[in-house]
Amino acid sequence: MTDLSADVASLPDRSLLLLDDDAPLRTRLGRALEQRGFEPTLVGSVSEALTAVRSSPPAYAVLDMRLEDGSGLKVVEAVREARPDAKIIMLTGYGNIATAVQAVKAGAVDYLSKPADADDVVRALLARGDAPAPPENPMSADRVRWEHIQRVYELCNHNVSETARRLNMHRRTLQRILAKRAPR
Image (cartoon, rainbow, N blue to C red):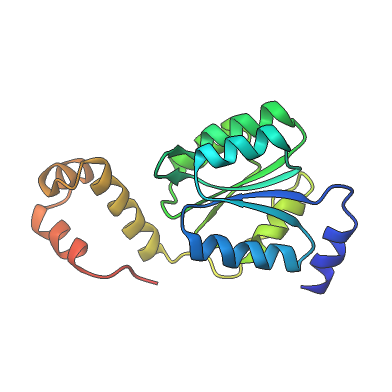
């Protein structure tokens, strides 16, 4: 933590916007980023984030992808407009390739799955053009599969038959998977 804090302390502008609708996660991550030297502004909705960006465009942003009142991609575009040099990281509990591509096209520099470790977030924010180091605790293949199934299930409005058809799997197999807890 100390070398990351020193790197953050050397930054000319340490303003950071943290957008997440999960209040405990937002508070915990906000404190951790503040301890590492950032000056975070914590917001819980797209509308609050857009207001914060208009009043004071941040040098850094850590944004949740899916929120109750919209998409974090809207905030990425607002930050890019207000401050083209800002470094933006997207966080999401629904990690998949399509949303990662959307985030990068919108202007994010990296994409991390929740729950993200504060040190991983700081490393991604401080990365200088090269790809950041791989995370210490990446999601297991089982977890990635489970996340993908949950995402498709949600997009199909919790219709098991439609989800099974789209995933090309038997409906009963899907029901068994949905009944289990998420793998680690």
